[in-house]
Length: 244
Image (tube, rainbow, N blue to C red; front, side, top):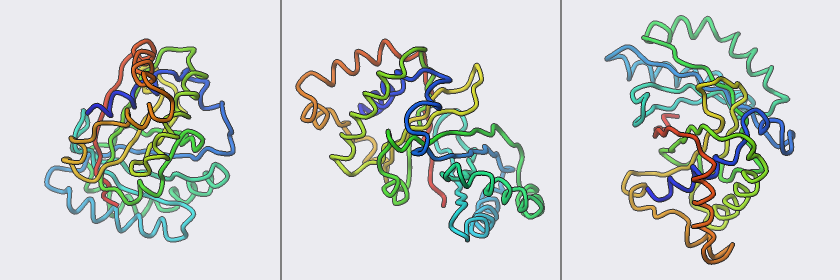
């Protein structure tokens, strides 16, 4: 649980509405998330139908679709259908493909759905993220949806860059930074994601304080947390299971 705090303080430096335009725009990937609640008792049929759909959707290797189940958090019991991450140069192709598959979705999946939730659109910032291959091999990930104070973009990028170096050094947990492309007053500015494989591993993980201070000096972890306390407005967390 100590690891959770440091992930949050990162996000606190972000200035909503400017982060998506900062950094190297050629080193960002697009991600579309659709929240879905299946009908009660239809969860297994829903999963099987979506996995079959995803295999067809993803068969060309250019447009990847995945399914995640929210295990804990406000939306526990809901699922997230994920399109991407995909290069922005391919996004129109993938969205058109999604439209061409709509009839199959409506015939095989929609009858199993109780309710559709939000549809969200994010940047995955590769300059600030590490471990996409680790993510693919993991069973779970935890997501923080963070509301931030304005005017903190540059400090955020500096701190996120340091934590990327920490995770690269440890090479065991994926650390991903997403920026929200669609601003709304009650929506998160940024998502932070990291991976784990079982709940005992999650519970026992002390966080990267030792590695952080090894790389950046004694006392730097405490300073970072103090910065975090001055940067964040609020946040929510959920844990998701990677169905496929």
